[in-house]
Length: 120
Image 1 (tube, helix red, strand yellow):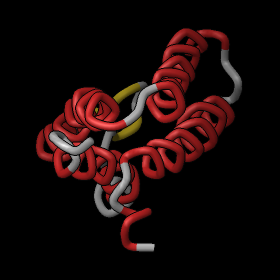
Image 2: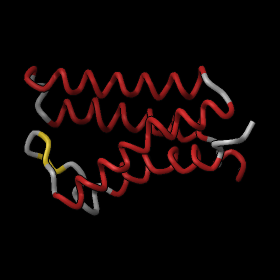
Image 3: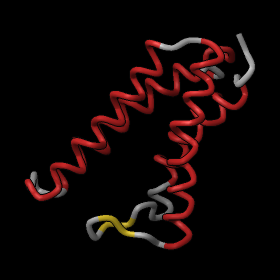
Image 4: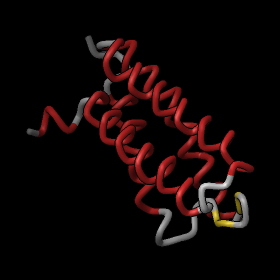
């Protein structure tokens, strides 16, 4: 079980599921299904596709490195958003404590990617 938790692939799959359902579908429903913000939610859906690509089409060292490169900037964005109290479409980017779940979900693949950076 411990080995499974330390693999970027597992965290990419968990992140993709949460990102798609809470970020894309939930966000779209929260905004009332408005067409004005559709481009943003489609882009967020595309990010989910990138995450799935890295999870299923790449393995080993390359997967760990790609995971880090994809997820680390989002972690930094959440931290900056929380510190500066940034808003997107009138909603806080990372309002604490509600922002802890997405921050943790983006941090775990980043950490496992860094830990497996040079693994085979």
